[in-house]
Image (tube, rainbow, N blue to C red; front, top):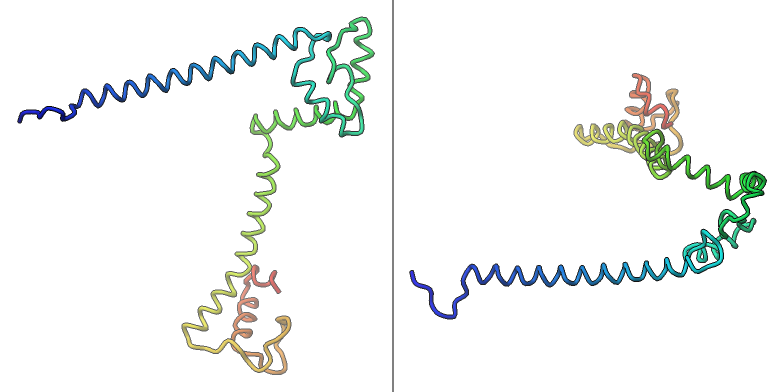
Length: 196
């Protein structure tokens, strides 16, 4: 079968795709170059400042730290330069509350990343799943009793079926449903016994 003129070929389709991919690569290169230039400017700004370790991020952090009770010292917001009094400065820094908090957060982060401890969301979630499992186990015998009554076409209500379910037999009949629940508890259903 001959190809008609003007009809696209398979090779022309792939040439168009290659051109699109090339254009996307060029756009990525340009964005990467702009990111690198912005980072270089930020580095130049940080090198031109008076303190050794201060950069544009630490200036932003100062505003955040001022919300707390303690103002950050030399080792947090300002670069450290006085090496003659280093031991005293380090001891003072170790006594600060924000340092203790950061050490605690770092140790918990390392434990979580090593897999020795669950993170807080997982701990809360595991507690919640445990409660859900207990609640499902407690309500399962009640639902099974309702289904049994429905299969046998037994009424759920009796003459006196309000209030808490007592484990002893009542003086007046309180309905087949409550009698079946009481029978299940007497036969050793621990989940239903916790529910009463």
